[in-house]
Length: 393
Image 1 (cartoon, rainbow, N blue to C red):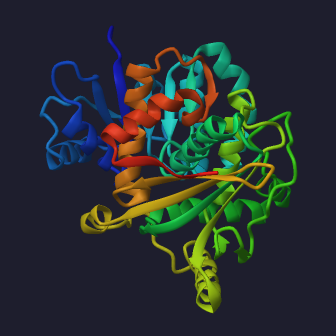
Image 2 (image 1 turned 90 degrees about the vertical axis):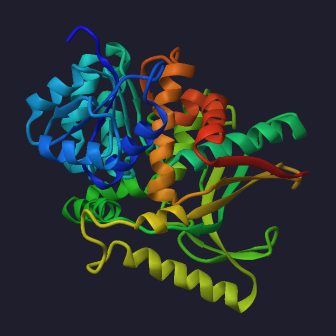
């Protein structure tokens, strides 16, 4: 075909991919909208999903299968940007990413798998720059609110203190969500890969795994409950910190170290003060292990529409100056973070890259580093996120 689709949603018949296609169908159809297509393994299922989400009958459908690399290459050849929700990416993502890099096609995913991401960064950084492909990993709740939360609070610190600060805390104050089977499967596969190859443990332990050639200062381990005097609360380990913290450090590097080379960043869950706060912190730790245990959800399971619509999140960012003064900011979302909000985030990332940030150069990017204020504006305007300064100094 002479004209490529602006966006191809690969995995449109899956749990999250259907939400992405549904969002595009509701918001980006008609005159002036980007052209987009739905892709998946089965044409019959694509037709069924297209009709179920109310997409136009003439929405283009592309049959492509991760088990058939030729079909992936054919799909990539029809796209300016491929948005893929097909995970675990360590099983189903490598051939697609390779095809996008080879052809110079842009790529976005929802990957939360640190080992695979490290391997892909090492393998394709140079090739993507050469081909013109713009690759953006982790374009959902993993890790946009966290990456942009750190960026937003540092921007305010710069206004208040005259410069960015060397210490930022990311804290989950409130969250209502439910893991899907796909998320649980990705986590389990990561641990299984480590069990088979113990050398991979070093990737999971390295806070600078995503910053090849750069290693910053020692970072908080975040592996046990601690009491934080400045917040007057216990905090517990956050299951997604192992990914988000790496993406924040990579973002700092990609932007030219605006936070400094001595930047320290961690993420925890606030659980309250006193004995109850400590008990809550222990419950959070137990819940983290259950999400990847033998009784975790199976692939394909996920929250109901009611659960998605009633989900929310409230994230606190604390920028700490060397003299102890603080700037605090919040990032909030009005839907289930892992799916309803994530579907909006990756969709708006795609639209932002096409419409607002077309000048982003080739390479392997974090979305926040690539699109910065442009992405914040689009998320606030369209995706139900808010960014708010709470206290200064």
